[in-house]
Length: 337
Length: 175
Image (cartoon, rainbow over all chains, first blue to last red; front, side, top):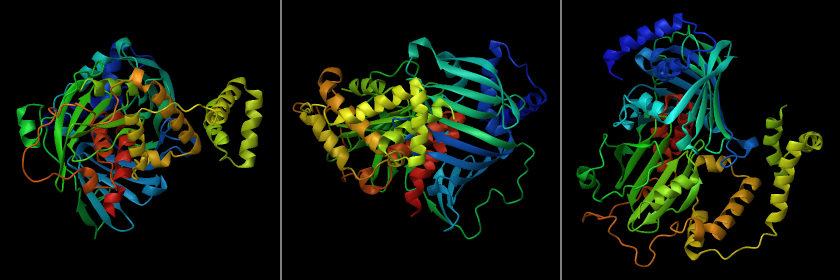
């Protein structure tokens, strides 16, 4: 986000903070709610206790579903956050420090940090700045009522895919009316099943981080992420030249998705291209990597609510990941010859 | 508890992983609730019927894919956390259904290297042989982790969910 816009956004946030909107806003207001909700993390300073759960019966057994509990502290204007996990057990000693450039995943016990490129700003080069337009084009948003979450009055915003895009996930946001911060998020898959939720159980907007709060603990050893990413690229001849092979582009892309850009990822002699598609809310990734032998093949869970489909074609190993219906991924795969 | 909560426990009841007290608790509810009872019966039928399902001949290419996938030791973290008997039953049934319908429904979901497949989709630059990500980072699901980074950048709403995914998949890199 350009720095020049931050002042304006901060003003909007202040105005938003002073405005407790009506319980049922006009339908035209709903995208303004969403735009503010998307920017809330950049504007607000807060400390929030959160629970994120994955309920997807196809990727998780309900009783063993992934449940993450964490405290997230954010200083929006400086773009820094600090997250500390209480669950799952694998992450109990983990603290995550983020700024706009890097993510430091810190093992507090062993005082080791993995430095990763946040790359958020460059992940969506072709659609940065037009997200809300894509969202408007592909989804219908409505205000479905109000509810109190973590002691705060929230507007319930339902985001449903347009009729021609049935099979795409939908979301329900519970947006704090005074700050536009989403205090609860429910994601359902294309079949209408609730697959994951994130809920804030308490939030403190008066939180002011002490000095050094977002710094690495003293004596921490920093390891760099072995995976490097190129800057944003377009799918043109220069991409093929840098890769050393010509990436295969799908002839079919699910309705509403646009090509959002590409990155070359590399690590110690391995190189792959990550082609990205985005519809304003959901993402599809296509990875292509040269392989000398048979690569991975078949289906796998692809993350919260997502599926991954891998296969090989010629000398390429390919993987598609998305939270759309599996048959859409198959159709993409089939369109690649 | 609501029916939704009971439904989550029904999977584990069928798995046989609930302790006796909780199993009785869930059964007491399913005895009284027709909808949850249907769900329980459906899962029990699935489990009971599994062994009786005639196994159609699996297309060779798909069988190879499944065998290869099964041989892979590394499973994405969400797969590891979700590995239960019920899930495995569902997955195997899904594979059998795929095998039965695959040739008709998704005829091109076949293994690589089929006869006559053109290699023109990729042209490699001559030079040093390239290593694969599986060789370089055998304990990391690189596509899964990269997608999680992309997804968290895409939608600020879902940032936390995907951040957890990135953090879990990155754990082995701290070793």
